[in-house]
Length: 288
Image (cartoon, rainbow, N blue to C red):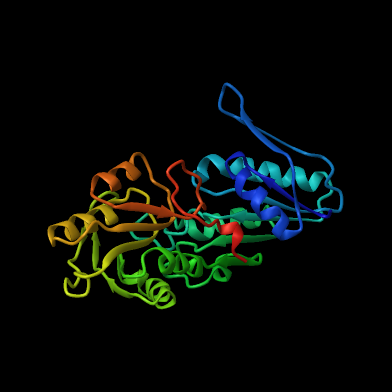
């Protein structure tokens, strides 16, 4: 078999599900730390003439950056014909311009960093704003897999009488696509961010939500503040508890517990970032 997937430890389960779909086998990649914090990456050596893909969700990109480069370079030393990166969650996409004087514009920098080590990249629903396509960031072939069909199918099967609520205007196109596929109504909220953890969220139209189950949809939940503020507003309006659907469950610190504490009926996510609370019946690997 000339295709080998080398998963970082947290992606082993996802990789085992993907491998037969890609006609590949799961290879060995070990990652440990010396007492001083330096990484030691060890991969299998039988890679001569093989197409290799590293599988790593970039939930902690600063921690993973050097080990990714070490693993890719070592695979090339062992004769790999090509080396790609499957990153279900792709970090460093938000800082695509200089918002304040002196800030680093990290999105293109990180894209160049990855392109130095990999021949191609695949991710799921990257958090792009002012840059419409990955091809404008990456000089290597880069493909974004859409999760909208998977999410719409889940909504259709589980909550057909739903109204989708998008967190802000930037989510309009994506949320409307999910809603159209699921055959449900949707609304888009206005959001004003006050620093890293402060968010003000506008009131939705109450008439469109009274007789439906509200579903708050977002591509990323990091601090969870946007969803928490929306849950609070919906509760103030006397609406039933909302379901929260997240593509990339970053869930920094105790964000998941805070979502439940704010009144979420259920928090549903893909497995792009592994976490013990994941509540989603279908995996990304099961969708072309």
